[in-house]
Amino acid sequence: MDRNTSFSAPLICAIGDIGVDLVMGMLDQWPQLGTELVLPRSELRAGGSAGNAVLALRHLGAPARLVSAVGDDDFGRWLGAQFEGVDARLAVCEVASTVSVGLMHRCSERNFFTTEGHLAAFSLEQALERVPPAVPGSIALLTGVFLLPRLRPQYPQLLAELRARGYQLALDTGWPSEGWTEAVRAEVLAWLPACDHLLLNELEVRQLAGTEDVDQAMRIVLAHLPPGGTLVVKAGARGALAARGQQLLRQSAEAAEVFDTIGAGDSFNAGYLAACLRGAPLQQALACACQLASAVLARFPRRGIQPGEFRELLLDQPA
Image 1 (cartoon, rainbow, N blue to C red):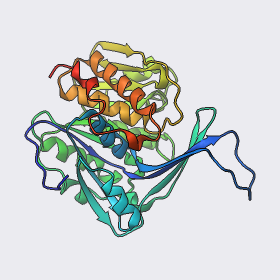
Image 2: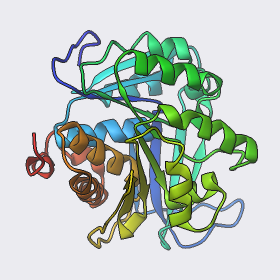
Image 3: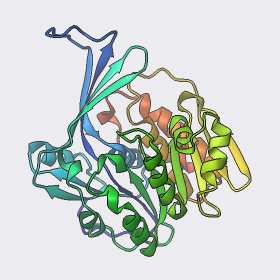
């Protein structure tokens, strides 16, 4: 889609990390050093939290914009081409592209090996020059902050400018490489008064709140959001929880056997925000999120998913 594409209706603008993902598996155990292992499955695809979310929005047929960066190399050119049909506004950084190898284990766990690449060079200026004023009702989804070392110190300015441009804000922090230190907790909590939607998993919300009890952690974190803000906690195969004001909701997910769980939370984010964009009540938004995540994870390789293929998941949501 052309960089100058404009939208007259609200959209979701994902701002954050994209990269080249090589997903391989299954591993029964780590091989010995110096040996070679032949694996039965692999897929080379666009990844990163922002990339996965935007592609899931494309699967839904929901209006989406992507603001990120690529490296100045063959991988960068390939990566940009993977977002056909999306309003992708990608800075080109004069470094190698970020590449991630995801190894899937038969026990359903996974490991990632990721290079810094272009994500280390993505800046506030590059982001803001690619974000136009919002059509009223639009949502900016921010992801991968801990993978963006140049942008991270300027996150308060980014949040403030996006609000000034008329966006609702949704944040998925991801996991800090240095762990949830006191300094990291204070940093993230300072961002929350600007956020309309906070999208975390169970471990993240517990670490952010400094307690092992999920319900208590949700109360602590919700208190830092603005009035009317929504905290969503992703619980994997069990579904999700959400809190808004005095509301506390739970949504179960259908059981499914999957090989590749990479991007599960990002697909969940896409379903949730797409339903919110259409004015769906909170319970319906959670249901759409769980359904989309399950639908995406059931497919391997994912390159076979067609634009709009999961559109019916939104049809039951109010327009």
